Image 1 (cartoon, rainbow, N blue to C red):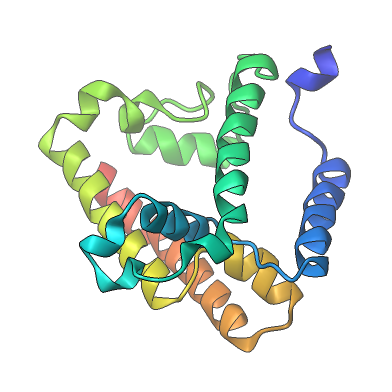
Image 2 (cartoon, rainbow, N blue to C red):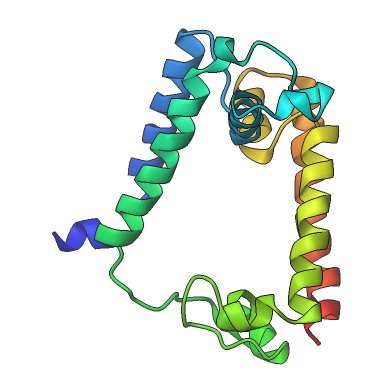
Length: 185
């Protein structure tokens, strides 16, 4: 069972993602977690609060099953396939993290950023609030999330998805090299 406690190699994970995508395309569906969350909100009655959620969500009911499967799959992977090993990062990444007072090679989500104690500080709650607003705004403005555009849209050769993915990468680079060092110094 030890092989289950290691991350899947790219040559296993990549074809599994491709198989998933081909099945969705074959059945005429598009992949995207943000669309699934939109469908969930509509199914739970958010249409009474916002016009955005007033549509026939039953046409996309399969996404509710997809979201539930994603949650259950994540739980199974974390609970039964997690070896608890420390995350191994390069020496350059370790030095950059330690320069921001973040201990490298500990867990996937460093306590200096993701602990409950940090959540209830002004800095921690501000990061989550502002980050959530930016992600929500960006996802709505781009008409989809990173998974929808990068996996489904690009494989469907859609130019708007290419533009969105380029924007996601630029945003990620700005966060990594400009904003995160400013926030955590």
